[in-house]
Image (cartoon, rainbow, N blue to C red; front, side, top):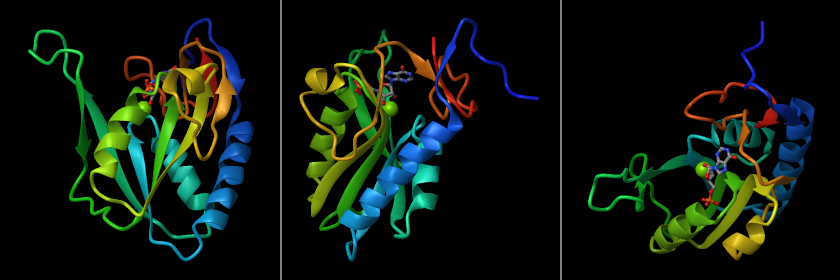
Length: 176
Ligand code: IMP
Ligand code: MG
């Protein structure tokens, strides 16, 4: 039995299409980072399947670390602001850092992480995305180093991405 699909959703990308994209990115990454001290920094929680598949598609054996973005909810004095939380003691100084994130949309995560990661003095900082929403490069004001698959500007779920913490377990990616 398969897990339930969101109501009135349509399949955008199936497991084979996702797999092909991740494998193509992995060979680019393998090529670029030969003989470097690579650290993949995954952004929780949406990138969980993506980073796992990416890591297993590489011939390199990079370190894997995690960050999560916490947004203060309404009612606190900092409502609407967000901060970055590292999972564990992550040393990035002088190392080649590749951020692995699910979707580029408005560039909010990109701006926050860039600032905080650059402050840790990595040797290099690059970005890989699974997906890019239409117009995202314009909204974010940046072009990812490892491009995501283009999806329309609608909410998507599956393959790690959620709607209110549901549907992360779907193999494919669905538009609501
Ligand atoms: P940005 O940081 O403003 O570019 O927004 C991207 C972040 O918001 C992603 O890393 C996701 O965590 C989340 N997000 C944006 N759009 C979607 C979506 O359609 N489905 C699930 N999460 C999304
Ligand atoms: Mg995210």
